[in-house]
Structures are given as structure tokens and as C-alpha cells.
Length: 483
Ligand SMILES: Cc1cc2nc3c(=O)[nH]c(=O)nc-3n(C[C@H](O)[C@H](O)[C@H](O)COP(=O)(O)OP(=O)(O)OC[C@H]3O[C@@H](n4cnc5c(N)ncnc54)[C@H](O)[C@@H]3O)c2cc1C
Image 1: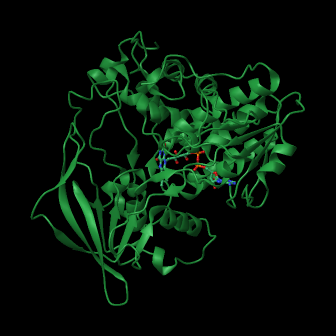
Image 2 (image 1 turned 45 degrees about the horizontal axis):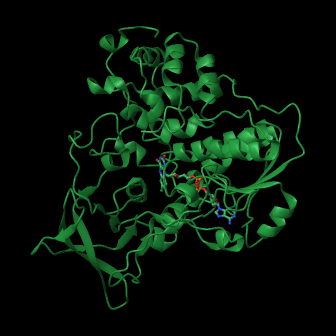
């Protein structure tokens, strides 16, 4: 440890944001840079805790105490090397990860945890600023060809790992640009898209081929891929949107969150010149149904459009500010989360169930009928509270209810099974029942997080390499086990 009692000396600092009024004027990121000297002191808060639980809190097994120590000692370039040894894309996780590492930080037992995510983001940005991040081109090539279907973080991480050991990798993407949900789900105010382009350019220089606008299974058959490639990785994400089948669900004015967000991301990118009315929240009373990350992104986007009002419904009970006894450290804390989008203006309603959409004579949405509910903590059983029915005025309802699993076309064409919860089935080697077809990311694990997608892409690469070459030297996740 750089400074053994640094945690006693320095208080945690968090990234600060531009004022709400100015950040709502555009879609840019709005964090304010933290001074290097302050980050170095923040790293000194990492204790000599003996068993760094953050290793197992992080799905990538990031070597957090090691890079903290290097940052404290001003060895930023070495810190970058340590960070990159377990994480292909710290610029994504450093901005977007909910940071399970911080939830399991030992300092968190008595004090606010080390600001690991902030340090991670700054290590990678320092790397880009100083030109330390260069394409690593393999010295020799194997004669093996690998097709990766889907260019989200799982597919991208796998492509870099497999290319690094000399395989010839081609990524097929059905969208017109690379990035998966990073590109067309997550808004620019959380992740500006030049950050994806910057990384994809490096991957291209390393020798990875990208083919956009190719929907595998439609534009090219999976049989053709199997003929042309030695192994195939399916990393197509979890894309089947959950619907809300209640009376009135076919009215005009009810939109899926992903349609709304994709439209907006294409607008910000200049691919769409003006908002289509159905996806335009300006001057409308918006109700976002669903209180997760996606719902939060819809709130931030609606406020940037200039919505008249924004309300967010969440079915579950309002969580407390502190962990309760059934949810101890170092597990993920189920506590109240307030995102930057929440701070920008929204009324959050908890324990509320939407019963019915109400329309006018032209079939336009004008309101929602709800009832308050109680959820039993132990059984999870939901019961409606009598006499709590309420009608809310609403011009546009956005359904942010998550995804039910991967689309079935590809697994069906390949005669690959889905498991009991609808994800693509594989063994512990990420291999489907077809020997040369592997799977990783949200399509295998169900909707999850970027950090998990990267982790899955890396693990699958190890197994693909081993399958092709008989053994693999690709790094694997540490064996501390997950929390
Ligand atoms: C709105 C939103 C906000 C989120 N915010 C966060 C966040 O802040 N932090 C966080 O950690 N996680 C967040 N997530 C979750 C995170 O984005 C996902 O867990 C992650 O992107 C999954 O990565 P993936 O590579 O498995 O799949 P995806 O990112 O979904 O990528 C799959 C890709 O496969 C392509 N594809 C599908 N089928 C085919 C085919 N047949 N042929 C060719 N290409 C195909 C798709 O077009 C897509 O580009 C968010 C998710 C959403 C929806």
C-alpha cells in the first residue's frame, strides 16, 4: 500500500456534475474533471485489507489494490497496464458500471468505499490523453478463422482477446454501427459515442474485421458462417422487449424504451434530422414505467427533449437508504439509488401497478389508471391495496420493463437449445451443444451489465482458443469466486 493509513487522512470524493440547467441543453457528458493530485490521494484510501473483497466483487477480477497503489505512486502508465490486463474497455466500465467492487470494498464497512470507478476512468483517460494506448498487432497469425455475431461489449471483448493470439476475427453486426447497447441503448450523456469509435478504431488497426448491416440468419446463413469459419461466437444480446399486456396497450402514445432511446441516439448522431412525433417528449406529460437503468435513461432523455412533466413508476417497494440485515456487506446493496437523471427532474412513485391505459376517441393515450400495491418481503407476493386506484394524465408512456431474453431465430436455425429462463444454453465452457459454436454476454446470461458482458466475452475467448488450439494462454478470470 502506498500510504498505509491514507484512509484515515482523506475523505472520499465523487465526480461532480455540471449544473442541471446547463447539462439539459445538450446530450454531452457532464462530469467535471477531477485533479490528478486528488485522484492520487483517493487511491491512498485503498487499505492494506488483507483479503481484497473488491477482486471478487468485480466480475472481471480487476486488480484494484494494485492499480490504486500505482496511481498513489504517480505510476499512471503502469496502473494502465494492470487495469488493461483484466479489462479490455475501462472507458466503458469507468463511466457506466454500477461498481459492485465499491459495494464490496472493505473500507465500506466503516466509511465510504474507495472511489474505484472514478480512478479507473481516469487511468484509462490518462492513457488515451498521453497516447499510451496503441494497437497491439499480433506478431504472427494462426490459420484459424472466427466469426463473432454481435458487436456489444461481449462480442468486442472476445474479438480483442481472440485477435491478440493471432486468430483471424470477423465481427458481424446487424446495426449500421458497432457497439450494441453501448451505441443505441445508452444515451450520449452517459457515454459519448466518440468513446466507442476511439476504441473500435484501435480494434480495426489490430486487425479485427467489422461487417455492419449484416443480420446473421437473414442476410447470411448460419450454415455459410459455419462453412467459412472454424468457430462462431453468438453474442447477440438479450433483445426481446417485455410488454405490458393490459387494457389499452395498443393506444398511440405507448412506446418501448429501446425504440425511444435508439431513435434519440440516432438523432444525436445526426442519422435522423428531426424527431418523429411519436418519439418526441417535448411539451408532453411523460410516464416512464420501470425504475431500472433503462427507465432512468428515458427520464434523462425526456427532460432533454423538454417534457412538460416526467413521472416514474416502480412496482417494487421504495428501498431504504441503508442496507438491511438480510443484505449484509459485501453483497450488492439493495438500497435507494439516485442517478444523475433522477436529479434532473422526475417524480418517483413506488409500489404502484399500472392497470389500464386510457385513450380518447382517436385512440390517443390520455391517461393511466394505477393501484398501489404491497409486496410481501419474504414470499414476494404482490397484493393490491383497496381504494388506492388513481388516474394520471399522460400523453406518452414509455415501457422500460427490461428484456425477456435473446431472439430465437438464430438458436432455432442452429437447433441450439434455450434454457429454462429463455437464454441460449451452453456448458461451463460457454460452448453450445454444437462443438464449434460458443455463446457469451446477455444472450447467455440474461440482461445484465457491461462488466459482465466483457467478462463473458473474455471467458468465452479462452474456451474458443482452447477448442481450436488444444490449449490456451489467454488470461482467465481470477479464481476468488463471485459475490
Ligand atoms: C438503456 C440501457 C441502459 C443500460 N445502462 C447500463 C449501464 O449504465 N451500466 C451497465 O453496466 N449496463 C447497462 N446496460 C446493460 C448493458 O448495456 C448490457 O448488459 C450489455 O450491453 C450487454 O452486452 P452484449 O454484448 O451481451 O449485448 P448487446 O450490447 O445487446 O449487443 C448485442 C449486439 O448483437 C447484435 N445482433 C443481434 N442479433 C444479431 C444478428 N442476428 N446478426 C448480427 N448482429 C446481431 C445487436 O444488434 C447488438 O449490437 C444498459 C442496458 C440498456 C438497455
